[in-house]
Length: 181
Image (cartoon, rainbow, N blue to C red; front, side):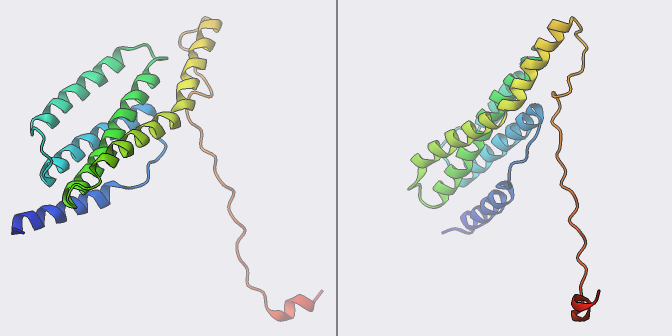
């Protein structure tokens, strides 16, 4: 194996280990942005790993993603979460499939068909996680329409954090304290 191929494997492995962090709950637009970046980077990594695809594919992908974001911004506010969630699901699923394909190419390509299942599964997970945000946007639009106030702020529209109460401080006790009153 050539020295370049060894370096390529190390770079791809380092990227994949850094990129496979836990997904955090985000708003739909931020999740779509993260998915777009992950898809673009994983496409480049897949090409670097030796995937037999056109190297212009990531460039076309950037143009498509820009057009998608432009279209989503032009939609009414109630429809934006659905558009962003659909984009996030597709791009994050594609990024997961690309990462799997890169690993498959590095190991000889034996599990490449399973990468399609990985990508579809990750996209479906992303879509179902965003369901509550999409429903909240629809409810908010209905509330604004029924109140005839287009600028009405919806209390449930923004995701609210539930904070845990602090655990009681641990206080060491001496054995003499157990029997003393």
